[in-house]
Amino acid sequence: MHHHRLAAPSEPMRSERFGFDPVRKAWQTGEESLGDQHSALGRSTQPFQSGGRVHDIAEIRDLVSVDADFRSHTQALPKTPIEAPEHPPGSFANVVDKVKPGVVAVKVKLDNSLDDDDDGPGGPNLQQVPPQLREFFRRFGQGGGQGGPGRRGMPQRGAVGSGFIISADGYVVTNNHVVDKAKTVQVTLDDSRTLDAKVIGKDAKTDIALLKITESGSYPYVQFGKAAPRVGDWVLAIGNPFGLGGTVTAGIVSARGRDIGAGPYDDFLQIDAPINKGNSGGPTFNVNGEVVGVNTAIASPSGGSVGLGFAIPAETVQTVVDQLRTDGKVVRGYLGVQVQPVTKDIAEGLGLDKAKGALVNDAESGTPAAKAGLKSGDVIESVNGVPVNNARDLSRLIAGLKPGTEVKLAYLRGGKSEVATVELGTLPGDSKVASRGDDTPSGQVRLGLDLAPASETGLGDEGVAVMDVDPTGPAAAKGISQGDVILDVGGTSVSKPSDVQAQIRAAESNGRKAVLMRVKSARGQIRFVAVPLTKEG
Image 1 (cartoon, one colour):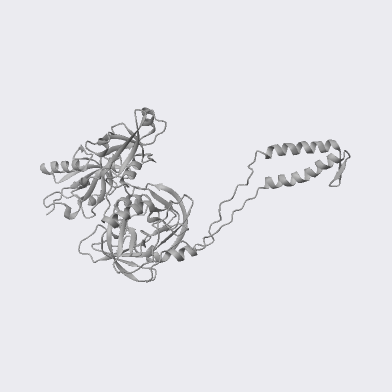
Image 2 (cartoon, rainbow, N blue to C red):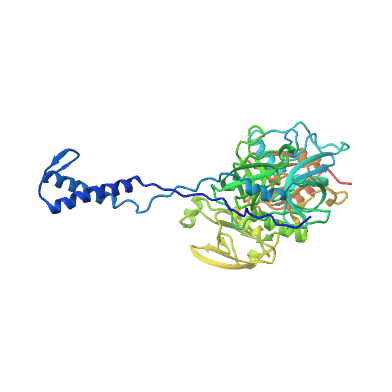
């Protein structure tokens, strides 16, 4: 197989601009005809005939006066016509021909899977959708599939999704939720060959996974876009909806920066190119054949496309893929502050002109923020010159940087602008608590939760955020989902994973068989949940 890079069409699509200014055209016509009349006035004071009627000098003076008024009025109009937007391309065929060989179908075999697969040709099954997306889908009425909780001993079943090749040696990008529980992975190329692949790394927080085709060769591949798309730009989605590989749909970027409650770093593109079950992990292309997003989710009352699709921006994907390719995992920067949004009332209380920025509630002792001198009450306005509009922006910007990176934080203190240089740490490893499977030592309580301080994830200024859920754990059985925030455990407020651990140990020592948690859902609903204290081994 010859190595070749998929590029934009050699003959870019052209469109003509057009413009027409009837006022200017009318004025030019009028100027020419009235100018002739003015010349006639200069040569003679006699009445003249026009259109079969004789005009006297007084009438002509009236005409000149009207002409002057019209000239004065039109001088205020733009001197150049307003140009209409470019025509939409007449065909996307050239782009599709170039990039389609770089798009693949992803097929996985699952152990203990449910009755239907995630993106395969069956009914929608929320247990295979990322936990953080389930509430979002339910909100729009998608509902669950036929299957119940996973059961051991069931036959292996499959799931299908999409992906795209990013290098000649066969690295493939897809969604984490497509391959998360995979025992084996295969990719089907555009030429119908089906090849084995292995998972190089996954990142649940952004729902990105990186695969590698195991058979050596030189594969056609696509490239990421160099610039972010604008709202209104044309885009193409290519993927494997309902197992129909190589399906192409077109639309536009409807919005940017969408937060759908999928995770702590949401920054989705919203597109109206139809995507459906099976498109997960597939690419969104611009008209130059560059990848600008990874298709991940839809909002739908029916389970099918209604023009509300969501794609992870290419700039986010590239950052994650680079780390997965090098290290097999993603390590994020850590600042060590608890923050909250600056509301209008808070802005007025602090004497700020606008309700923007991230208000520092606390700079934890020994953290990079504390070492740099940040204090409670500071309002962080930017990171390396990038504006921080709210607390979530700060979390996303810091998480996008590697530990050890030096950043300049612009902040307000007492109404005065300050700048601090901070060397980022590593997001603490205690974000896992009684977490997943073999991570829990024998004899200890296992909840099946990955946790982190909510203030560090953009999910609020109090409580402990649920970052991931083991679907076979006791917490999942009680309905706790990724994106939930645990406010207190056993009647005691919690703010970090170690607080949860402490209250679990206290309940256990008191002989309790369950611990009562007060939990806030991604939709803001607060409820009490009694989670069984199940021990490992």
